[in-house]
Length: 283
Image (tube, rainbow, N blue to C red; front, side, top):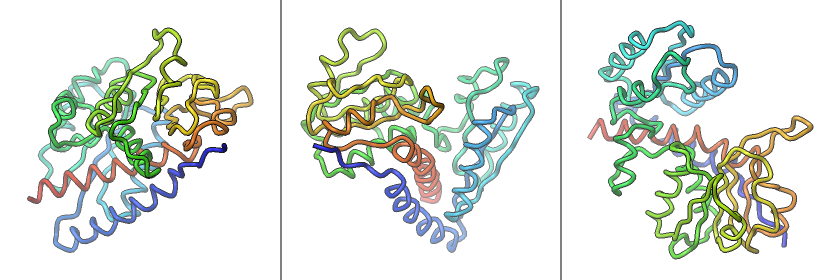
């Protein structure tokens, strides 16, 4: 068996086209969705990611604002900008790019964002909505992973899903989204003994631990859906995920590549969240 590739780039294009159509319709009614991004410091990876977010907004009919500040910006100054954007009626989504300089309390900044504009879905309020099953803005990467799983046509209900990783940004919300879809979920992490014992039972595996070759072919149930959230470099400097792709693709039923799998979906779901926030504000 050779796994079917789950093409995140193609799915992303389809979803973005829908966002563009809906955003342009809102703009025609005088309610253009707007996203504001704050970047503090000069981290190269963050700068590229932010540029891609702003570019995606421009290409799909969303208004965007990018505020770029030096690493010397104080926490007080940053919180003041967040407060101002919270009250800006043209801004429906607001995110502060992580990581922040060490002198700024990231949790305090996230907590200051109006929950109705928390398109990253990182706040305690957003996490609480997800935990309790209330509608709200979901973290973009796990949200995108759910769309990738759904695109395979496999019914999630009743399936056993294993999430490798317990971060607040991916692992935990991923597990909760799968639970909402009526999967039976096991969460594994760096302290889990015999990881393969769990993954070999899984119909769905989401690898989000940040370590290459965490999941190998002998750890995968034949026909499983494998979603690789990892972003690492191999010994040759080539981009790779947490999954031993060449080995696992010969066992799994479906698998996401790296790059071209989860990556394109993260910004896409950010656009979806911004549109959702704009629709909610207009209702």
